[in-house]
Length: 326
Image (cartoon, rainbow, N blue to C red):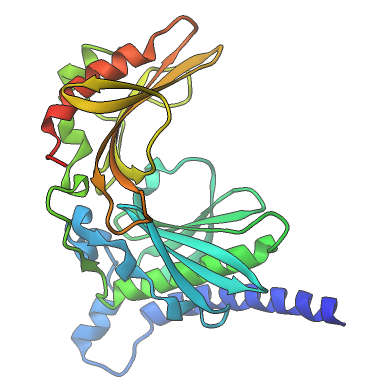
C-alpha cells in the first residue's frame, strides 16, 4: 500500500505542475476586474528586457521564492553557485532536489534539442531540453526570446524524472509570475567585483583574430555578458571564450601572467586540445566558503599537435590588465 501511495503522490505532483502551467497561461490573458489599462498591460507581450532592466545587474534570487514550492516540500536556500544563478533545495520524499535558476540566455543560442512543454501567455512559453534521468532543464522564454534557465537535480535513483520535472515546472511558472508582477530586482554588486564587467569588452576582434582563425564578431553572447565566445563550437573549429565566474581554487600549472598569479589547465585529446587559464580575484562573498571570483580564458583547437595554452595565455595577457584589483 505504501508503494502504491508513493506512486499516486508522484503522479499527482506531476499532474498538478502540468495543470499549473496551463492555468498560468490562462490567467495571464484573462480579463479580470481592474482598469482597462491594467487589462491591456496583462495582455501585452512580456519582454524580459523591459521587466529586468540591465541584465548584468539583475538579482536572479528575486525571480523565485521558496514559498512557490509549498505543494512539493520544505525549501532551504543554498549558496549562490555563480553570479548568474541562485539555488534552493526542495525536500521531497526525504531527498533534497536542488533547484538552480536565473541564468539568462537567448532562445536561438540554447544547446541541444528543446520541446515546448507549456504556454504561459503574453508571448511567453516553457521549453525543455532533454537531459539525463537525474535532472530536468526548463527554459522560461519571454516574448523577446530572452530565456531564464531552471534546472532541477537529485541523486541517481532517488527521485523519479517526472517529479524532477514537476518541480522544474513549478519553478518556471513561479519565475513567470514574479516577472509579470514586477518583482525582479537589481542587486548591488560588490565594489570591484568581476560581476560588473562585460566579458565581450575584454578583447577586440583583432586581438582574437590575431591568435585564431575565427570571425572577429562573438558567436555567442550571454545577455548579462559574463561569458563571451568567439568561434563556432562543436570540436571542428577553433574557439576562444572569456568568462567571469565563481569557484574553488583550480589545480594545474601555476605561473604569473601579466603580473597576476594564474593557473593553466590543459587537456589533450586525439581530435581537439583545450586550455583554460584562471585568475582568482578575491572571495565571492555570497557563495560557499573558499569560493573565489574567477576570470577565465578558454581555448579549443581542433587537430593533434596544437598548442591551445599558447593561445589562451596570449589572450589572458590582454584580459588580465583590465581586471579590477582584488
